[in-house]
Length: 225
Length: 225
DNA sequence: TCTTTATTGATAGTTTTACTATCTTAAATA
DNA sequence: TATTTAAGATAGTAAAACTATCAATAAAGA
Image 1 (tube, chains in turn orange, brown, cyan, red):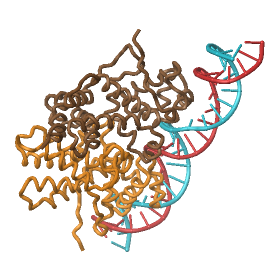
Image 2 (tube, rainbow over the protein chains, first blue to last red):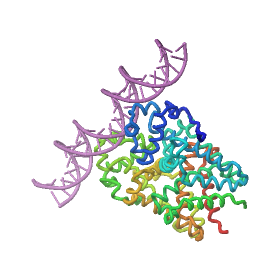
Image 3 (spheres, rainbow over the protein chains, first blue to last red):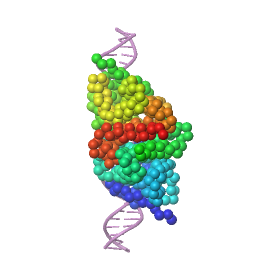
Image 4 (cartoon, each protein chain N blue to C red):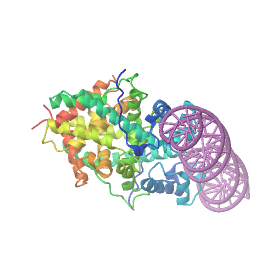
C-alpha cells in the first residue's frame, strides 16, 4: 500500500472536512468529474447530489457554496503541485535545470495516480486551466485572501520566484515572472485547444511547444548582460 | 462637436442593437458602472433594470443573457483598444518604439473621454482586468468562437504579433508572446492591487513598473543572438 | 450494554436568478 | 390615417441557491 499523500487544507474553506468521511470524499471526487465535464457555471449542488446519491442539503453540510468548493479544489491543486515540484526538483542543484523542470511540470498533462486517492489530478489540472482564475477574479478576493484561501498558490509562486533568483540574483521581477510562467502555462494550453489562432502551437497542439516557449521566455529574461 | 467613434459590433452578440436607442445606450452605460461596482456574478438584469428605470423584460429585448452582455462589452473594449493602438502608433516607423507604445497603452489606466460617448472606458478597462477572461473561459468557448465573438481580441493579438515579427522576424512565438503581453498587462495589474505578494510592485503599486516588467520581458525575448 | 453524539437521509420550504409571454401605450414612419 | 416598432406594465415559470426540521442509524464513550 502506497503512503497516502495528504494535502493540508485551510479549515475555513469547508464546513465539514471532506477528507473525513466517505460522503466527503465522494463529493470531491464527483465534483472534479462533473466540473471537468460541465464547467463550473452549469455545475450545481443539486446535480452533484443526484449524481452521488445524496441530497443537496448533504452537500451544503460540507461546503458553504460552489465558490468555496472551487477555491478548495484550486487550493488542493496548488498544494499538490507544490509537493510534486519539491519532489521532482529535490536533488537537483543546478538552478537552471531546476527551473526547467518546474516549467515542464507546470505545462505538462499530469498523469493520474489512480491508486492513491479519490482526486483525479489529470481532470483537476484541466479544471484549473479553465476555471482556476475564477477562484480569485471576484469581488471577494480581498476577504478570501485575508482568510488565506490563496496561500498554496502564493507559496508555489514564491517557490518559483526563489528559483528565478537563484538563476539570476540581479533580475528585478522574480515574482511577476513566476506568476507569468504559472498563468501562461495554463492560458497557452487553453488557447491552443480552444482559440488556437492566438498561439503558435495550433498545428501540432503539443504541450512540448508551450514548454519551449516558456523556457525561451524565462531564460531570455534571466540571461545576464 | 467631436466625431463619434463607432466600434462595429458583431450582430450575433445582441438581439437589438444597443447603440440604436437611448434605452440601449443606457443599458450599456449602467452595465459598465454596475459590473465595475459589483462584479459580474452579483450583477443581475433585474438590478440593472431597477437602476435605469425599466423592466427586466426591457433588458432582455437587447441582450439574450448576462454572458452575451459581458462578451459584448469585452468585444467593444478590444475593438476600441485596437483603434487606440492604431491611432497612437500610426506614424511611428521604428517597430521597437511602436511595440513599447503598445505595451504602455495596454498597461496604462485609460482616461475616459467623458464627452465622446456613453461608455466609460476607464471603468470598462477595470472590468476587462477582473472579468475579461470569463468571456472565453467557458464551456461554450467553441461555439462562441465559431460565431466570431472573440474576433476583436484575436485581431488585436494578431496586430501585436505582427509588430513582434517586425522587431525580430526570426522569433518563433510571436502570437503566444502577444497574448502573454495582453494577459499579463491585466493580470499583473489585478495581482498588484488584490494579491500584491504575487508581484514585485506591491510597494509602489505603479503601473509604470508593470510596463517596465513587460518591456524587459518582451525585449529580452526579441533580442537577436 | 446503555446512552450520547455525530452523520446522513428524507422532506419541505424560501428567496433569488434567469428567463418567457402577453397586452397596452406611445411614438415614429409610410 | 394606417401601421410598424419600441417600450412600459404585469404576470408567470423553472431552476439555482440556499435554510430548516426531523427521523434513522451508526459509532463512540461511559
